[in-house]
Length: 118
Length: 381
Image (cartoon, rainbow over all chains, first blue to last red; front, side, top):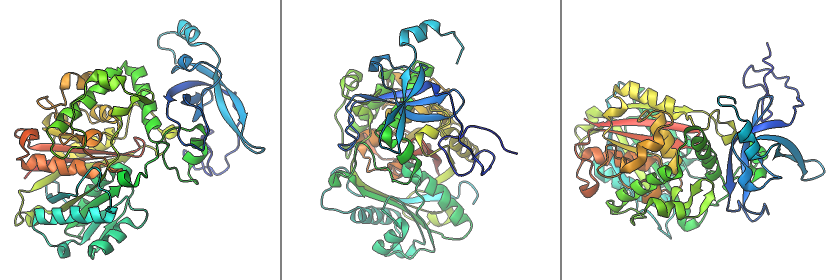
C-alpha cells in the first residue's frame, strides 16, 4: 500500500511507506511561515547576499516544509503564521529557487486571525 | 550491564581557550595523560577507545597516536552529543565483554586554526547543501534561531528570559578559574549586543576555543581499587529526530524528551533528584529547550524557569557550573566537558563553584541542530 503523503525534500523511497515509485506532485505554491530568522551576518563572501535577509521555514498548504527566503516585503513585516505564495528566482538555465512572498500584510493577517485557527 | 556498575574513574583536560601551536592530537594527549594520572591507570590497560571529531578514522588515529591497542573502537559522530552517547556505547561494550576499560577522548584547535566559519561547513552531497544552503542560513546559528523564534511565538518566551541564561552562566564562570569569559554580564548588555541571526544575540552563542578532554570508565568492582572515589552511571539514553533543521518535526520539542525519559527510567530518579545539571549550551535556546524536554519544568515554561538566577550560583538548579559552552570552553563539541564537570562536582572539593552535597548529577549532550540528544545521570557510589 502506498501512503500518498507529500515527501519533501524529494528522495528515492518514501520514508513513510517505503514505496519506490514517488512521483512529482504539483502543489499550489501557497503556504504559511512556520518560523523565520533575520540574518544580519553574511554567511560567506561567496553568496553575495546582502544582509539583512530572511531565512524561513514554510509549511506548504498540501503538506511538507521547506527552507526558503521571504522576499517582496519589508523585513519587519515578516511574522510566523503569515500566509505566503511562491515566486521563482532563476539561478541558472537549469535551476530556479523557490522563494516566498507574503500574500497579506502582517496587520491584515493579525486582524483576520481567529483564536485557535491554524 | 546492570545500572550502577559502570563507573567514571578518571577525568582530564588539556589547557583550554587559545592554545596556538598545538594540534588536536597533542591536546588529546595532554587530556589523556591527565585522566590516566587521575585514575591511577596505565595506558596499556585501556582496551576500549571512543573518539570523534578528527577528520576521519577518529578512534583509529587516536589509538595510533596515543599508543593504545583497543579491542573495541567507536568513532560515532553524534556531534556535540557524542560523548554522553559514548557512555551508553561503553556501557554496552563493557557489559558484553568487548572491552573492560574505556577511554573517551576529544580534542580540537578550532580557535587557533580559525577554522570555524559563520556560515558553517556543509558537505556538498547532503540534503542541506541542496535544500538549505541556497538560502544562506548561518549553520548552525540560524537553525537554533528558527527554534528560538518559534518558542517565542508559541509560548510568549521573552528575549530577556533567554538572556538570563547567559547572565547565570557567566556568574558560574566567574567562580571557575579556567573559564574563558569570567566577566559578569547583565540582561541589558546581552540584549544590546549585536544580533547575529534573530533573535540570537552574540553573547547567546557558544565560544570557539581550543581544548581537549578525556574520561576513563570501567566497572565499579575495578573502580574500588583505583585512586578516585567512584562516580557511577545510574542511567543513560539517546534519541534522534532529524539531521537537517527543515526536517525537525516540531521546533520546540526535541529528542531530549526521549533520551531523558530513558535515562531517568533506568536511573530510577526524577528531575527533582538532580543536584547539578550540566546541559549543552551551544546557544541559550538549547538550554531552555533541554530544561523543558528533560522535565525540569513544563513545556513552554522554560523562560519563567530560568528567570531570577534560578540556574545561577545559589539557585535551586545549578546549571553549567564551570561556565559551560557560553563561557568556559567550546572547542567545536562540548559534550565531554559536561561529563567531566558533573564528575568533578560529585567528587567534591571544587571551591567556590562546588555545589554543596551534590549526590546526583545530569549531563546532557545535544548534537547537530537540535538533532541528537544523549542524557547521562551520574551519582556518588
